[in-house]
Image (cartoon, rainbow, N blue to C red; front, side):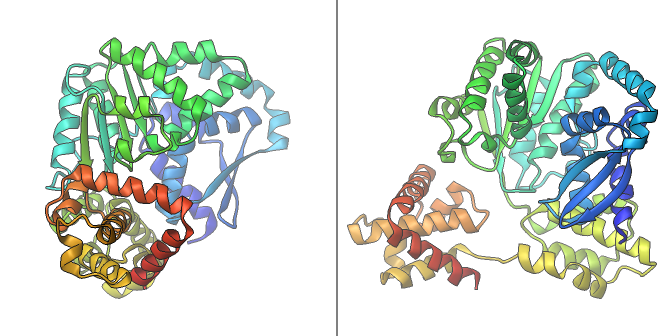
Length: 446
C-alpha cells in the first residue's frame, strides 16, 4: 500500500462517522504530506484548522489510521500549508464563524455512530455487559448509575459506550451528551488551567444530561484530572444524570486512582467483558466483512477466527488490512495470503498461555507440589507462590477474577483481587520477587 493511500482510506473511514457538512468543512481541504517512522503528516489549509482537528477529532482520526496501518503508536501531525494560509484569510474567518455556530454538544459529543446496538454481536462473553448497557440506554439515570464496564483491549467496551449514546440520541436528539476518553478529559483540564477557563470547563461538564468516559484508567497518577472528575461525577450523580465508564481494569485494581473515586465506580453496576468464544468471533468477522464489502472465503474466515482469539479490534483490523491489500493488488484473498500478510500480527498478538501452564511453571519454580498450589492450605511457603500464580493468570490471560479463583480450588474473586494487589505492591519493593516474576513470564512466553 502506498503511503498516500493510508490517508485516503483513513478519510473514507472517517467520513462514515460524520455528516457531510462537518466532513466537508474540516476534512475535505486536508491532504497527505508524508509518512515516516510511524508519524503521518497531514497538510491543512491553516493553523486554526489543524488545531480544531487535533482538539475535536484526533481520536476519530487515530482510530481510522490504526485500522489501516495496524500501528497503535502512530502519531499524527497537522502541518499548515503556509502558501494557502496567506491566501485564504477569508476562509479562516468563515471556518471560525461556522465552528462558533455549530452546537457545542454536537461537536463535543464525538460519538462514533458506527458503534450501535444493532451491529453489536452478543455472545456468552459479553451478554451481561450488553444487557446492562441497553438498560441504561433505555432508562438513562434510572438504571445502574454509574455503569462501569471493564475488560481487555479490543473486546467491545468502546462499542458499548458509544451504543448507549447513539440509542439515547436517536430517541432524544436534543439531549446533551458528552463522550470522550479520559485522555481527552485530562487535556481539557490542562487547557482550562493554562488559559484560566476552569469556570467554563466546570459549566460545560456539570450541565449535561449524560457523560460517557472511555479508558478511565488513564487518570492513573493525574491528581488534578481525578479531582475535577470527582466533582463532576458527584454533580451528575446527585442530579440523577447517568455516567458510563469503561476501563481495562476492575476498580479495586486501579492502584493509582484515588480511593474516593474507585469507591464511586462501584456505586452502580460493574459489568465485565470476557474473551469471545469461537462462534462469537466468527459472527463478528462475518458482519464486519459484510459492512466493509470484503468477500472472504470460508477457509480464510476459519483461519482468522482460529488464529486471533483475544482481541476483536485486531481481528477486524486484520480483515481491513487483507481487504485493502487485495483491492490494491488485485490478488484473491486466500489462507496463504492471510498467513503472509498477517504473520507479524498473529505471531506477536496471539501467544496462548493457559492457567494450567502458569500453575505448573510457578509450582516448579518455587519447588512446591501443584496440588498444594491449588489447595486451601495457607502455610507461609504456599501463600506467596499462590499469589504469584494468580497475578500471572491476571496479567497473561483473559480470565476474570472469579474464573481465576475457580482454577485455584474455588477461591472467591476477592481473594484473587487481594493477591494481585499484594504482588503488585511487593514486587516494586523486593527485587527478588520482581526477578522471579520476570523469569516466569519469559519462560511462559518462550
